[in-house]
Image (tube, rainbow, N blue to C red; front, side, top):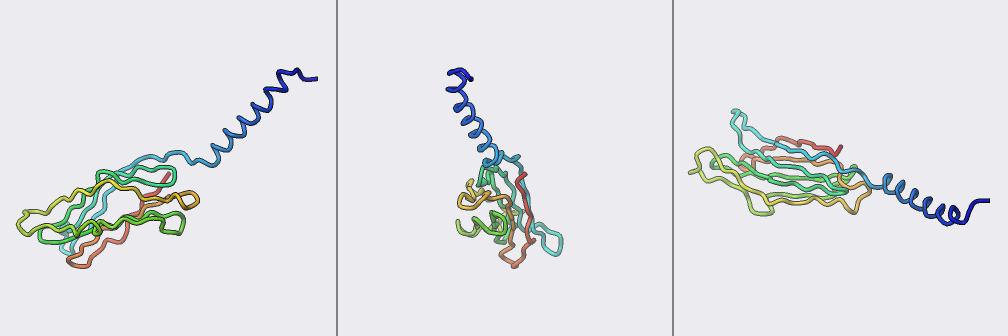
Length: 153
């Protein structure tokens, strides 16, 4: 017959093991942070719009940091960031919502615009955001590069 000490400790040990196992199964590990760049070129080969920055993955969301948008002199551009949870777009950031990013003609090459850090939230979706779709748009000439995709590990 087991001793009293074992009978007292056994339920605590079992409950602790169940808690650890549940946490490991239901909480995805933090993915590797990375940087990104996406651009759109005119037919002549000249750079029209470029976006760069960093991606920090969280449990169900993703934060984009140090985002900069380059727009060629005399033109306007924007960047779209779409966070996907499976086949559902969970969240969207359109830099144009903060004001159209343009570069005056007087700017020799173009202008870099700083975009404040922002988070795409996928907390309402099972598994959260697992993919980001980044698209730059040459608003002046209605041109887009399509999308560049970045995936959580």
